[in-house]
Length: 406
Ligand SMILES: *Cc1c(COP(=O)(O)O)cnc(C)c1O
Image: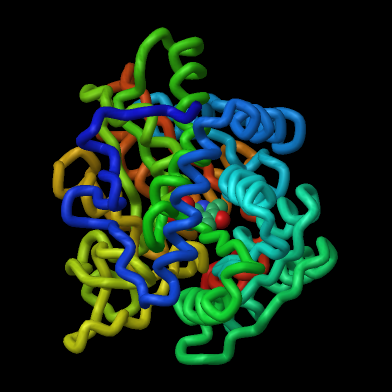
């Protein structure tokens, strides 16, 4: 079974985390999504389903992922001990394979033919196309045209894996529009498709289901840090786009009150600019993509255009559980700028020989700020949610545009 937490951190039967969550959907989607919730409930109590998933985690993904003590970075920052949860070492290079395998197994169990989803950085698309190939399902991925240009290698990978990639040309041609587009196709034929959402967002049961599939990350990290240090960490740090890698790490520690938890959002070019995606810092309660959550929105309630150098964080909403965890004061949400992120990307590459994803580099930028302020016996675990090979050309161009050299 997945890690269970005390009731205050769980959704109720309608999928509400306090005031946030639920499943506010157009009438024609209510039944298909309710069916996913029912089938998921059955699946998680079926030992065979859980066994299948855990077998794939170990035999296919390569779990448990390492918890790596970053000795060089620790020494350079001269503060707390820094551990990295190495989700970048998973097959396909990020944490997303964890929930994609779970969703693919559930879709198969429900007798669906095709997985359909949106993708931002292309990481969710690649992970889902991978899971579809392995489990034996079709795969249709909707992706903003701008992201297709930025992440061309990932588009090729999806196509090689047998997925059909649909370019979305509407609006800002990014993640938000890709979600709308994929939802539209699904709504027309929910009996054929399983909607495989790429984060802890969307209508109930997705925020709880994706979190459950990801909770293996924190469960492992807890056992690993107890083995290495004989005690719990003082801080957990993870980047927050929709919030799945963050809840993956956080869930097993939510009831451990001595553990401080921070989620890191993209401040982009600054919180006072129009170019950021800091939903927790600057958003307000609203409705987006079938959930009540915090949303960056215009005066008329429509979602704001957002920016981040990490296309996986480029989203005007956030998983409803994060909005709830903030309201409970259990998790603190901070933000870092594009520039701080690029600097963190380079620092980890050069001190540890590990190239992190730009998404994960947001968490590392916060580590770089926090670690020197803590005593040397303090322990930080940061989630290295993915590898940065996909971002190398972009970083080189960014540096050139800012008159800096590699
Ligand atoms: C997609 C992605 C993220 C952001 O998504 P969350 O649901 O917030 O985790 C972070 N890191 C990597 C490597 C990603 O691919």
